[in-house]
Length: 131
Image (cartoon, rainbow, N blue to C red; front, top):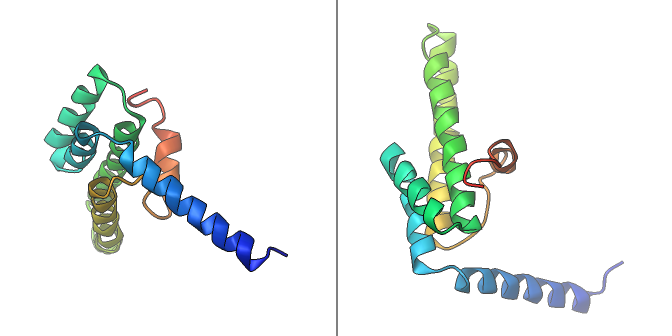
């Protein structure tokens, strides 16, 4: 069993690590991470600008937004099916918008935090994007 002191020191080291990650991100990287979430045009701009000077932080947010965009397109295709497709699409768009907001807020705050449930999969599925 872990003692309370070791848990507290572990929590402080996690906070320090998160702070260090935030500090090491340049303003340009942070801006590109945010731009990636602003429409498809913003995603393309962030992708192209990241090709000049590769950044894992920007690649992370490009992959997150690509996954959210692909999921949105999939929901649009499902929406073609009458009744059941409409229901699935409506129920799917709500968490997708929440994930988009969470990803955007993560980029604004300089975090490397994947969106819940599917964010880790996006990183794995799209690992060749921006690499």
